[in-house]
Image (cartoon, rainbow, N blue to C red; front, side, top):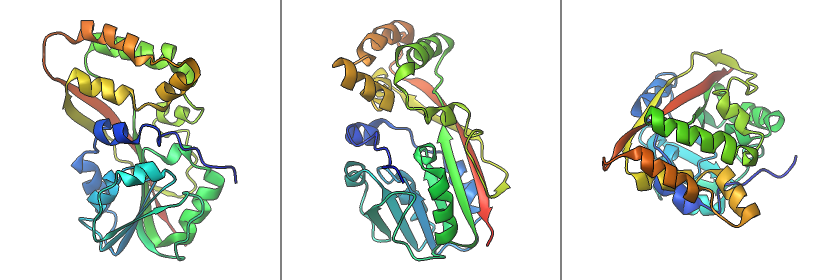
Length: 249
């Protein structure tokens, strides 16, 4: 197995501060599929956003990531156990979990290794829920600026795995008994500084900085300020997509 990619340790603090949070409707949708709530695994937990929500409903939550710096940002909680482990090979016992979740991370995994591991550690009829969110939308004028930045300025610096986000995970292999997906929207009110902080969390931006020793967000923000107008905050929307399946064994 090749070494898993860690594209987010460098900007772990920014990631926690500026990444959007998932809507309550997403968790409500998934929880309806999981009657037994003894133990959940949040894989690719990052800063623990999903693990904290799962901990409200499950007796135990295991949360893993390959980034120690991301895990350092995660809130400590009595029924959450964080550990530094790859998605594809864990030390969890066979048939441990009622629910396995992956928020905005599954596209980085080695699928040939990940799905057998999921099958191994899942209880019979457990649920696997993979989800992500696409490019944000604010207003037609701002969307044009951001789309140009996304596609043209930093397009060449996205990892190949980004194609799975652009396809709303339709291109992701999913060898499970598939259930109806959750689709929805993340909606937040952001200042222009929030938007700037979020853009700086993009792995492509960090790759550009590493190569050119300059931040491409700076020039983009000049155009964003012109299009933003006078309002202190604007509504920002992200489309949420998912693949959900039941693990039959």
